Length: 107
Length: 154
Image (cartoon, rainbow over all chains, first blue to last red; front, side):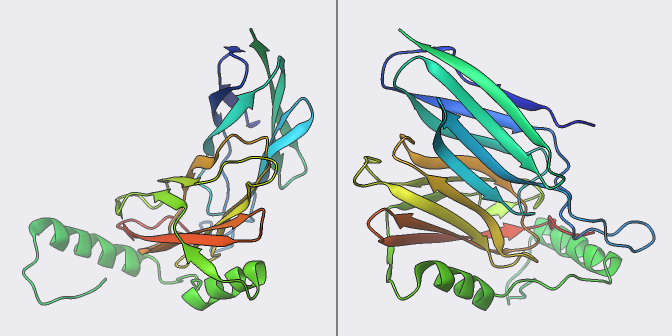
């Protein structure tokens, strides 16, 4: 199943307003610690990095380890200085990148 | 599980029994990170700098019934201006097979050095949050979480 990012944030904001972003992505975050029925270790397969940018500039990034729960939830704050595009990206161990773009209009 | 000389409640006895059953069901226990491993990881980040208390707030449950999903909120006091901001926040769990949980990098574009996430804790242990400021100062806070059902392996 392809991981699907879900992001909740307002579409409009006042200039300089701090807005909260809530993100969730479906992913099993296989820790590499579990064993299958035959006692073989199930290989690690996690999202190892998350980034948030505004108009191409990095706001924050995170390195994730196997101790992040399945279907990673993450909430944080950003500031809307001007009308622009927030891009959130999740980087998979298998090389895939999942992106979610959100335009916020500053009145 | 710690054994103390006091009368146990029904709930505690049930938890103890559940823990014992889990231990029997899992003969191959993974090796767990020791506190010293966390100390060494912290040392590679901070070097010879002093770690101060304060500025870092952790919001974690004191008892987690399910170690697979433990909500963790952290916040670091900072003006988050171009001259004075929180550069990085590292999270460690000394009782997990791998003590590193996550490392956040903030920029002055972040209005707050704070985030909410959900983590896995394999057993009862201490979670440490370490904040590195843009001027090089290091602050840290820790909290113990009692875990009744582990979050790794199995």
